[in-house]
Image (cartoon, rainbow, N blue to C red; front, side, top):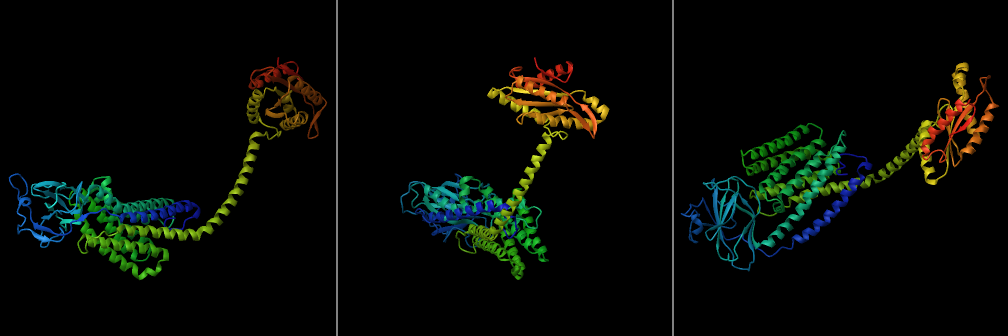
Length: 599
């Protein structure tokens, strides 16, 4: 049960899925708490957030192709002081800037690296006149295309202390320079630092994708109802993709920064589409049209921006400021639309809407930090997604407790109906089996039953080694009875003979009508001589019996019998049918009304 406010489903269908999701959610909450504790234990580092200098423009190259500014005097007045190497004043359309600082002298280092959260947009790093790092491809004019916003690890020599470090930066974006954090640390400590700060986001992102999967499955299951889970699935999927793509650990998994930025943009640009679909589903008045126009506008921007970036018409970086402005306007419009009718929503819908609102506020705060409106800090955008997931889980718990009694009632009712239907089905199956193995005229077993019984009896006789005897019986001159007295009289004779056979043979003997006027008797653990005596007694009884049909005497009716026995006459019990049939044929040719044992 992912979002009960969107649909009222049968508890029987979703109980197991909802229970698994709730259990997983609590485990994730515990893991998040433990990871937050781990994240607080950071290795010792040196932050380089002060004592920087900058100068606008790009350095000319000396005869060796090295930028001349990296070997200039330290007291060059062209360099100006700046607190943090980002967005110096008086840019005036400049796309090139240089930054420098003196590396600290304190501490002992084994494998030092300089960690930078991000750079806008391309950079080269120089130490002692040598380029030690480059990100992006610079052309002959010192420019290049956007290559993504990764974190940077710049390897330093162990004797870096007190040496000036230069950054050459190119950006056609709204910001220029280094961004976020600049830390000097050991390489091993850096990887642990990145993993600790990414762990929570990774878990929340995966949890969002799990929620998206469940909501998508329920949306497919609930096809045809007035509710659907598409908005929840889309929102969870978009936020999960955005969070995972923005984590620094993703670059450690696949070092393709531009790929991750495209995924992040795709998720980020999709969020207002999902919110619009959700609100459109809740409001059915004239405001639906305006809400639809808002999410359609964002969908159009998503396709246009990513399409233009992929085809090389624009840099992906330039699509973010436009979307940020569009998002702020859209959130304002949506707030104006839904605020007057907020009371129309129930408590569960308000909880989901509140989680969306918190997520939106965190996105706006992150946007303000990205554009320098607020000082840099790690905005916990993933917490907004976590609150959304928790809201869904809380609603699911509430709905589960409310429907638990109904579930029991439905289960009991279903079990009763199943038991009733099962009983009816078993009765029907027994009737069908009886019909399929019974001759309707005589009430004896039919040929199908005889064939299956012979196979089973043959196998049993072979295993246990007891004799198995078969008697083939045929009514003498039966065609004459039909011709003289009619088929109804013939049927009466067949029924009478079948009754006489049932009375004469033992209860353990199996009597079958094979078809027409032919019968078979299968006798277990019985020798042929004993069977011959029994059939001879039957012949004598029939010779004294006068049959009638509707008070019309038909006369006496005689039979001929052929007997074959295993293992006396055959090594295979299945061969008894052919042998007994030959014995019957001999009895017929010998004058009928007699019994003959196969010889």
